[in-house]
Length: 179
Image (cartoon, rainbow, N blue to C red; front, side):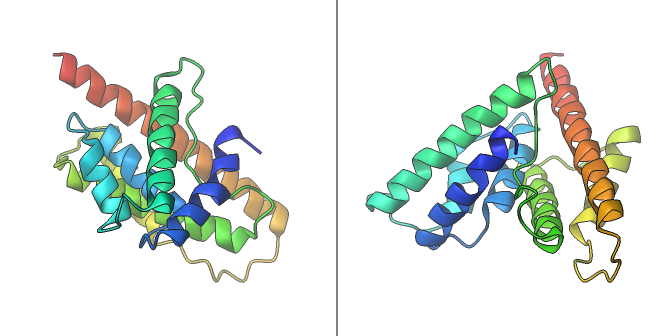
């Protein structure tokens, strides 16, 4: 289990307790999409995740703190020279169906975050990556393929592809901001 996967059940529970309309995977996807733009805004992200939740409420305040820690952790991962970034999805103890569904939701969140930040035009490899994320977001969790080793291998390949694609997109956007 990776460090970020340890965060998933805790944050998911917090989001459920405060009545957020999304999972930890989708919240992280939105965060990553926003971070891959030059227009990251904490308040915009928190408003999308927490909605009209009363932040003065103790549970909501705790959830907001967890989200801000996740943001800081994610930025560290994206800026790490060791390619440490990982999408926030359940660990291997969860069913493959649940993990695939969370990954699809993460991709939906990522695409939404890019749109929320106003990032619209992509070319070349970036466009291909975004198109692939659209396909992954539509993934069917009701597959009847019983080869769990094969499914696990494919799932890990998709995670690795997303990981590298997000890091590349983040680096590209940060480079274009410096120009």
